[in-house]
Each structure stands twice: as structure tokens, then as C-alpha cells.
Amino acid sequence: MSEPPGENSLQCSSGGVQKEPASAGCCTGNTGPAPEIRTATSIITPASRWDHFAAQWGINRMGHTVAPGLYRLGHPKADSPVFASANYTLSFDALRSALAGTDAYILVLDTKGINVWCAAGKGTFGTEELVRRIEMAGLCAIVSHRRIILPQLGAPGISAHEVSRRSGFSVEYGPVRARDLPAYLATHTATREMRTVRFTLADRLILAPVELVHIALPALAAAVILFILAGPVAALAAVAAVLAGTVLFPALLPAIPTRDFSTKGFILGAIVAIPFAASFALAPGMSGIAQVIAVLVPFLLMPAVTAYLALNFTGSTTFTSRTGVKKEIFRYVPAMAMMAGAGTILGIALGILRVMGVA
Image 1 (cartoon, rainbow, N blue to C red):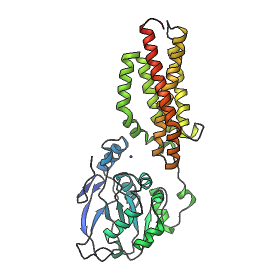
Image 2: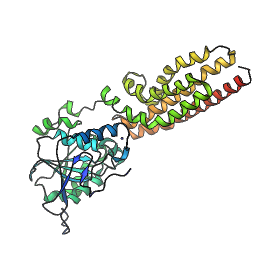
Image 3: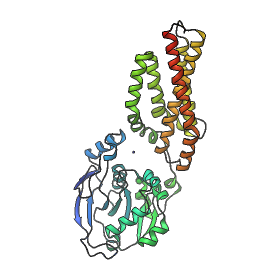
Image 4: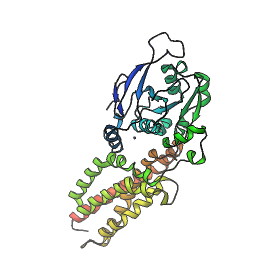
């Protein structure tokens, strides 16, 4: 999930980074200045951990970057492995920390501060950028082999045969999780477990803060307005709908029936709306028509909000596709809009009826 530091930065948020002159020019025979190789370590410093925390909470969202280019980890030689990574600090740090004790090169692509999986979908962790970085680094003059190891989740953005044809480097896909790299490097063979993409409760919940922060300000504004117009229960309903979509939905994702994220959100939102609908319906002094409207409002508004936030969560998962998300958008967003609009109109009508003394 501000501008990234320039490529001439001497430091990044992942810890100290120094530049060193490369040993040769680029592969295309450029006679200009030799490309630079930065030096990285496998140590995750307190500053790096703060950067991770800030990224997970959406603080300075696009500022968690390292400078693209070639990095030296340990004391690599010409036959040392070469890994590719995104210039998102969490991606880069996961890779370098997993390679503790390994002498290697890390080729960091310019993904605009986006992680490998999302950048592959956007095309920034892609064939063009990989080939360009190989040439800019002069990689064929630095290593004796012609193999570069990519994270498996970067595969959607890479055309391996095009990389090979244009750069001479073959693409090798490593395991899904960086922590499996030491075992993978022993045989260069990934087990079924290494290839399996998992999205555990911990994986899902770690994404909740940034989703919550993204919607926090509008949610707070809506809660304040509803508190003024309709009281504390209405304000609490707004907060509950947002928490259901950003925290409860990721936690319960596999347990909610249906396949589409939007319909899962509708179901969860409807369940969360039940106590609020009951509270509104049982409010003293309400006529029959007012009670009906009071029940309908939360059942229209809350599922719409929760479903929208659930649909937004597709971008945080590893098992949705762009085509699938587009289908969901065209299929369900109009329904969300109609439900939200109808709920708002009925809520205003209920307020008017109560002011007029009819409700």
C-alpha cells in the first residue's frame, strides 16, 4: 500500500545505504560513467521497523521507498545470485533480511513505492522495467551467469521470454515468501509449500490499519453529522459499518459465504445492521410508518458502506484479478449507490416526519 527519495539519495528508510562504483559499464557497451552499486545489509534497524509501522498505518503512504538500482549484499562475486525486488521498503527489507549470511546482488525496480504483487498488476514490476534496470546496472558485466531470481508474486507483470530475448538473462521464480529463500537456494527447487499462496488471519489483519486510516476522516465526519442530526445510535451505526468493512471483513473473509467480495460485504453489513435496526424500531413514540422507515434505513445504508469497503479490499489480496474486480465494480457498485441513496432519502424523510410530529 509525498515523493520518494531521489536515485542519488545516500540513505533510505530501510537503513544505511552507501554508493560504490560498479566494476564495469553497462551491457550495451555504453562508454559513459560506470553504474553505481549501493551497499545494503540484512539488519533491520529500529528506523526500518518504524518505517514498516508507518507504512502499515498509511502514514506518508507513498514515501516508503528505496532508490531503484543495483545493491550489493555481503560480499558477492561474479557467480553470486541476483534477486529482483520492488522499491517499496517492506518488499526490499523482507528480501534483504531473509538473505542474512548470503552474498548476493539485489536489483531494485522502480515500482513507485508499490509492493511486488500490486506493482506486477499495475505493470511497474514488469518486463520493460526489469530489462531497463538490467541494462542500466550493466549486470552482464558484473556477474558471470545470466540468471535473475524474481519473487513468484511478480510473475503477472513479467514476460520471461521477452526478458531473455532482450537482456540475455533468464528468469527464475523464487518462492512466495522471502523467508523460504535460504531453503530454496540450496536446491533452486521450490516445494509445493513454497509455491502456495496463503492469506492467513494474521496476513489479513495486518492490512486492516491502512484500510481503516484511509476511510477514518470521512467516517468521523459522517459520525459527527449523524450524532447532531439523529443521535448517538446513528453515529455509532456509521462507525460500526466502517469497522465491519475494514476490520471485521478481513478477519472473517473465508468464513463469509459467496465468492464475490461485494456480496460478502452486503451479508456482513446486513448482520451488523440488525441491532441498530432493532434499536431504531423500538424507539418510543414512533408510528408504524416511521418504524418501517427506521428499520429500512440501517439495512440500506450499512450494507452499502460495508460492501464498498469490502470491494476495496480486493486490492489487498493475492487471489483476485483485475478482470474479476472490474466485473464486481460494474455489477455491484450501482446497487451500492442505489441502496445508499435510498437509505439517505428515507433517513431525511424520517427526520422531516419527526419534526412535523407525524412520526
